[in-house]
Image (tube, rainbow, N blue to C red):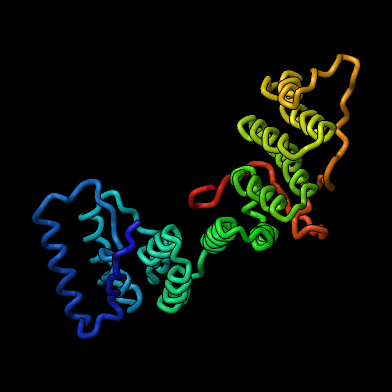
Length: 307
């Protein structure tokens, strides 16, 4: 995307350009197209459509037909829409590229200003919901990262509560940092609940195993074995979460492996887990409070880089 482009002029707004001048320009374009072979593999740009849009807006049928012939000769692969009125209002393609470029550069105020300017210049244009969601999510991610770096645990937790998109398997680092934020507030219970939410929500072994290892640092033996059972239920085919993993974690605590007659149950430990509508609802907010924030199962990430 090009962030340094400026909007091209549009025929109806060009001061001093007369209708007869545009007609002469179109005629010259037709003569030029007839005197040279058409260029292959070219795409019609916004600039190429300026004259056609002007004639459509003026209702000049003869000039529209002449300009269509010129465009077909110059761009053999181009097919005009069935309803030419769809071309009357140009799409703000360059402005849209600029908006996404500013979001990628973390210039969120600049992105919002460009959206406002584009809406003013193109009254029929509405920013797509995907664009607005990406803007909000990217800004929230930056704010969360800053809160974590500053050691502002309560602020970080609040950002995740208000922005559910940040707490997903695609952005697993956020969930791990959430658990660490709870530990900064001496809230071991909610930290453990966060690890349980990851284990019950995310199916990738690459996420399950490190989450177990992180939980091992704060869980009691009973809590740890309960988490291993949950991980095994999530991926029963994965050797990394087999009974050998439990034995290895127990050995790390200087304990002998469990005997075959000692069953382990998957009772919830360290917090409330509620499953609803395919999501594991982890109750995360300031210690003592419990508004739910979901940790959804893996879903496609919005445009932009995942954490």
